[in-house]
Length: 241
Image (tube, rainbow, N blue to C red; front, side, top):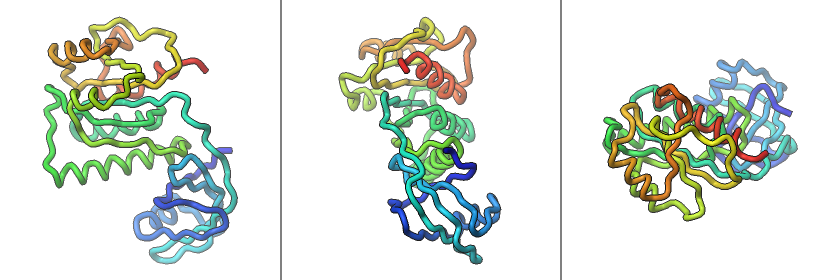
């Protein structure tokens, strides 16, 4: 059963307990969603379980929720899909992360690449990561996912490859490659998506030398912000049911 309204709680949930939302989250429930006392919704903490809950009380800055029994349990992930995407400017990055979450990425990693043309100082990066995590959580609330994808801060392509398990299958998307096969073997995958300016020839050579298949998804060149959703949709369609 999918509820119309789902809400993430940033602490472990237990049946038959009350939880309080304050400030921004309480305002969201009472003023944005306009939920009333005694209305039901689903809560989740990112662990893969959802819970029935009822709004017990609204006050000026607090909403109290009564958690009941487990509503559903998300099955274990059959294939982990790590999406490594190059940094984009502004809202394009927001949309890319949102769509990757909604289309089933289990892990989102940000990449610095030669043509990213985006940089952050330490303080601004911390703020951006917090902002992107909120986008991931809101996307899970919207799409019904109960497990929250991991978000990793920007790293180089070399660091990405150094940290990959040897068993993870590797795909880098580029218009120069053949179309993604219509059938893929069941396994964990890393999907690398470049910036608006595309990968440099040196980067593609580096991917090739580290066992990446170079594939495209369409005869047309897609915007980088739309690529995660398209790539994930095609990969999941190609995986065995």
